[in-house]
Image (tube, rainbow, N blue to C red; front, top):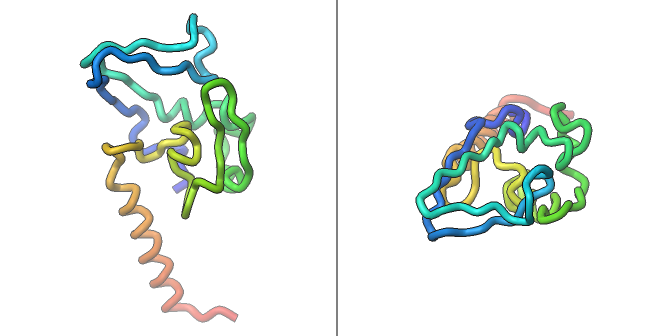
Length: 136
């Protein structure tokens, strides 16, 4: 899977439940007046992961192309976005390392269980390949 191009769910839906709240505006919200976006309690929030993962403002000019080397270098943050830090990624790029700018399986408590299933599936496939072939 080419790491979120396209992400499994093209849109994530979350609900603001902690009462009225304000969220800092990120670098992709240039036409929003002010520095925050307000959400009312119970309001649904739609997050376009498809657009987020292809944002040239976050990932550079090659954002819509498969580039596995992208995850090897640090990307400096802009505005409220902390950037991408490969040191926080662990085994593979995730929402924490990218300050939630890369969420192919969502994030937080409602993160898709398929994230861990995909990793386990890849481990099983690789171990089967290594058992059946000899390398020299």
